[in-house]
Image 1 (cartoon, rainbow, N blue to C red):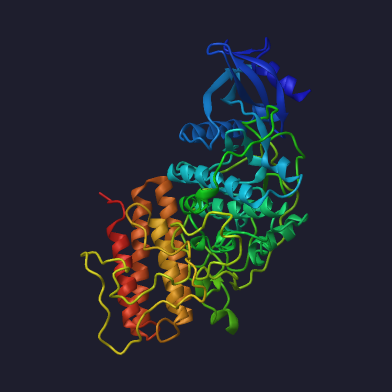
Image 2 (spheres, helix red, strand yellow; image 1 turned 30 degrees about the vertical axis):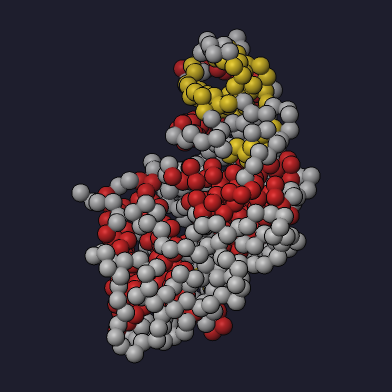
Length: 562
């Protein structure tokens, strides 16, 4: 048995480094085995993750286990698996075998539970709320999980635990030269499928897929063919939840998570706040399970973590602006203020995918994923200006808490409005005295409170959230018609804002001066674009004043370059 062979490599007498006594295997994946063990020094039960088979002698797989250990060690959160120790035991032929020691959990993974059917919606919201808390902690530490999926979520008597940080990316990760996409295909974000950098927003896309899965018992795009699955993530609008009794705002939140443009997705912190009323203890089973790796399962399948060639599409990788990146939209989509342009990272933005090898339930797919021709504009049928109605308001807490600025234009106001972010001098940008139309937000048809309506976040502490709010404001200006902001100009601005947000995430992870200088330069380019739009009559002077002031506010609050 492979797991026995792995154990003999590092513990021929059943004892690892004179401290950890192996009790028995809990589960085995493609390249790792998880054991129950006893820490004889402290007298507690633990889980040990050991490389097995050929991977036990592979440097890349050893590095991956070290990456997982470091990622977990940098996090201390009740919703994330706890790492107790990481050691390198002497192996065969003077080799060194890494061993990851974590807490031993009792419960079962979410994937196993969902095989029995969907969760009741209060439980589903609680599970995803706790998962959002875990992601918020990881993102705050500069770590993107990259593989959020039911198989990597453990249900325990104490609540949800997020597992398997083996492919997580941190500040030291660099671009995979082979442009391989890593993750679970059924929950993988469009930008990951293309081999572009995984962002915190990529985890939020996966969270939205997981929420749909919890509520319906199936993933949003349950395609057995990986090529078809990738096409669905890139091109298809997400299916509606269709669940009776859901509270106001849940559908809008889910659709926002599955936005094709990462800049349109809520942050993990916003999601945790929105779902906070439902976070509660989610009980799992009683049998100990492998907490440091997914339980044994098929080596492949759309619901297993995979390493696969990145999808390529026309224009991918070389474009700087929206017009250069994607073909012109059709007239109907171009006039639709809720249409979200397909995300294409800007030129020069490096990926942090890292060179990874398959581990646990990961596999290399034979052949290359088919080329998918992208639609120019993905009409995401969610206007976050309207929180959906429905649901039993008396039976459930309201979802009207502060959850970010993801609704279209609800915060867009006249430039002299006090809700508009101030300029760098602390004064509110003033509107032009010209005959430009008043810049005001469209009134939502639904009078109920929108959970995403709030002022701009502090750019010093949440630049990504600030940019997200700026994107929504631009959409609101477009919605007011061409005398306020022409649709093509708005699309170019949205594409540029998305590029800046991508660069901000990279700069936060790398903490490098060069990356922050790139952000500063991109903001300056956006300011110039706004000025050009105003000069060409594509944007009113009032809009130009407001956007310029907000961009200057962001630039003034970025980390100093020293």
